[in-house]
Amino acid sequence: MTGEDIDEWLDSWVENHHLSWGTPRQAAQSCLAEAARAGISERDLNAATGGDLVAYLEEEAAAIAEASGAAPTDF
Image (cartoon, rainbow, N blue to C red; front, side):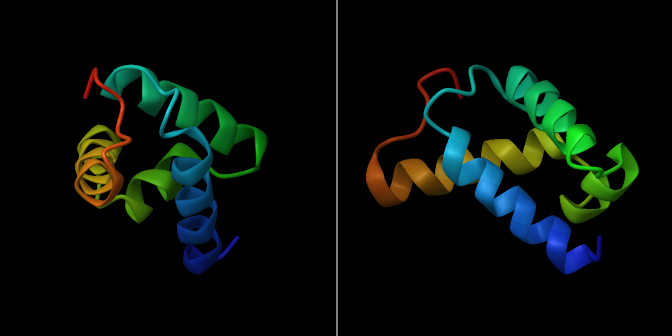
């Protein structure tokens, strides 16, 4: 997969799971597991998120909350 493919996969994962992903650490664990099943390495996923998947997901949750008020309450 290219970097662009991984970015698209990650965007889709966030869109599909943002309402049910629990805490940031739980979300990161779930994301890593699904990425592995999709053939994306942890290293490649971390590169796509700037090196910190948990922080990336927290930022995404904040953006979702700002846009729609639908972010998980645990974030």
